[in-house]
Image (cartoon, rainbow, N blue to C red):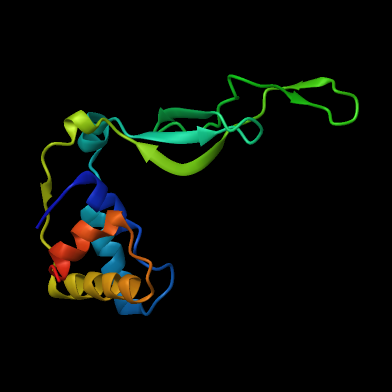
Length: 147
């Protein structure tokens, strides 16, 4: 089954944190299949989005850079005296971006029967809980089919 970058990232995030041992092992193996090789990460230039807690400025940094950068736009001041304490540290937003011009070839992945069924069950649950978003539609169509 051919999956795009956004489909692979979305699918990695639908697996629950808890579950029975069979589903957890299936989830782990499936996430490993969906993961990106070092070459893919370099080619796509994955970048984390960081945000200033004060001014909400967003800054992107390489995916492998986990050191919080300082805000380029504001300074942290003492709430009592106004003394400048330095620049606030940015926080990870959970968002990322990549070079979409290099995201042209979907990756062909093969899933076993347990993995396919687990994905179908999870997508069906998202739908029945009314949690499906636009980003899930292509995955729903590929794993379950169009209505």
